Length: 126
Image (cartoon, rainbow, N blue to C red):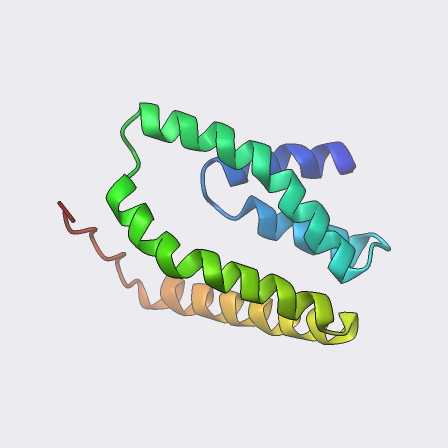
């Protein structure tokens, strides 16, 4: 099962489709790994996949580096703050928050699929 999850998460993460989400659900729900440890494993798993995928995306001109820079300005400080908060938060609370997040994503995806709302077309940001 671990090999299958590794293949699935690697493939989906490299396409930007939430492989880390799949890995985190697997580790925290189907194994006995505590939520906080699963989050750390997930982050370490993501780093080499993200780097390789980024190189390929840049090579194929699928990345808007100017837009990335804009998101990093707020994204990095928020990631640091989030890591700090996760480190001082009880694991039971993290599990509940993660469950609420998963539920929200699921409901949102069902809503979008049943209302047949098309995805917004990306405007040219240049």
